View 1 (cartoon, rainbow over the protein chains, first blue to last red):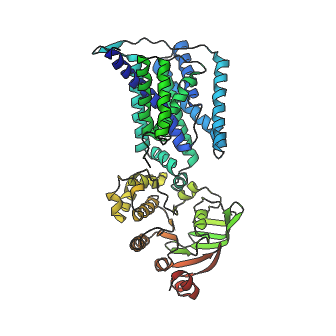
View 2 (view 1 turned 120 degrees about the horizontal axis):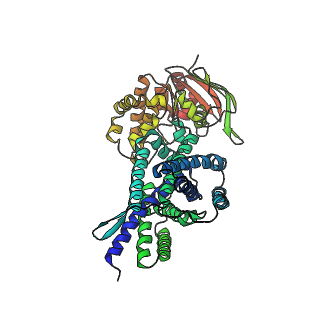
Length: 288
Length: 236
C-alpha cells in the first residue's frame, strides 16, 4: 500500500504541472481556434525559449526575471515570425499541406538546435527551499511557476473577454468575414493571435527550464501531450483545454507515483484514446 | 454628388458573372431598395459595395472616394455598414459583445457608450438580453442585433440584405416598422428584399434587378404601380 502522503504529494505536483500544461495547451488552442491550423512545432518554440533562458541566466548571469522577460519577448517574436513566414503563404492550402509545413518546421528546429547546441541536456540550477504543510513537501521551484501560470491564464482570460482586440480574436474564430465587415483586418488579428500564442510559449519555456533540462528533442516530451490535451478538451475550446490539462497532469503524476513515470504516460494515452471514442468533440462538447 | 454611386459595375465568382454593367446611386438621406427574383444578383451587389467581393470592372465611389478594389475592413471605415444575408452574428459571443464588435473601428470606439445607449433605446429587447449568447436569440431578435451591430459603427450608409428572411409574418411587420424608425433618424439605407410589397412602402426609390442587370429604376410608388412588377413580385 502506498503512503497516502505520497499520493497527496503526487496530486499536488499534478496540479502544479497542470498549470504549465494549461499554458501550453491554451496557447496552441488559441492559435488553432482562430487560424484553424495546428502548430505541430509549437513546443519546439518553447524549446528555443528554454535555450535562451539557459544561456542568459546560466551562462551570462542575467537575473532570472530578466531572462524570463526575454523569453516571453522571443516567444512573441517567434509567434509572429512563424505566422508571417510559414502560415500566411499556406492559409488557403489543403489541411494536409498545412500539417506538413508546420511538421517540417518541427524537424528544422530540432536539427537546428542539435547543430547549434548539440544533444547535451542543459538546465538552470536554482535552489529554492521547500516548505512543509501537514507532512506534504511543497517545493517552491514548482509552486512559483504554477502561481505565475495561473496569473498568466487569468490575464489571458481578461484579455480575451474584456478588451476590444481580445473579443475580436474570439469573434474572428466564429466568423472571419463578418469580423472584416466590422472593420477588423483579419491578417492583423491573426498576427496578434500568433504573438499571444508565442508569448505563452515563451512564458512556458521560462517556467519549464527551472524544472526540466532542455535538449533539441524537448518538443517530443511535451508536444504530443499538449496536442492531446487540446484534442481532449475539444480543439479550439479554451475551457475544455484548461480542464483537460489538469486531468492529464493528475493521471501522469498519480500513476507515476503508484507505478512508474512511463506507466503514467501509458495510462494517460489510454484514457485519451478511450475519451476520443466516448466524446470525440472533447470532454466539454455538447452531446448530439 | 450622390453619396454612393456605381457605374457599369461588373462582378462575379470565378468564371461566373453575377452582375453586368450595373449603374446605381443613393443620395444622402435616401432609402433605396433593390428588388428582384432569387438569384438576380441582389446579395452579390451588396457584397461588391461592402468590398467582400471585388469589382471586376466599373467604378464604385462613396462620398467622393473610389472604393473599388478596397478590402471590406477599409470600406467600413469609410462609413458603409453591411448587415449581411443570414445576419452573420457571432453566435458564441453575448449580445453586448456583438454590439461591441460593431464599434471595433477606432472612430466608432470613441463613441462606444453613446452608440450603445442609442441601440438600447432603439431595441429595448436587446438591453434585456445583453448577457445572453447571440446564438440563443429568436430570429427577430437576431435581426435586430445584426442591425444594432451595424449602427454601432456610426455608418453613413447601411446595407440591409434580406432583413425579413426567415421571420414569422408578425415579426416581418414589426421589423419593417423598426427600419422605418431608423430611416426617420436620418440614416441612408440601401435594402435588398424579397418582400417587395413591404419594402416599396418603406423606400423612396427602387431598382429592379434581373439576371444580373438593372431592368428598371424609379420612384417606389410608381414602380409598385407597374403591371408586371405587381404580377411578378407584389402578388396582387
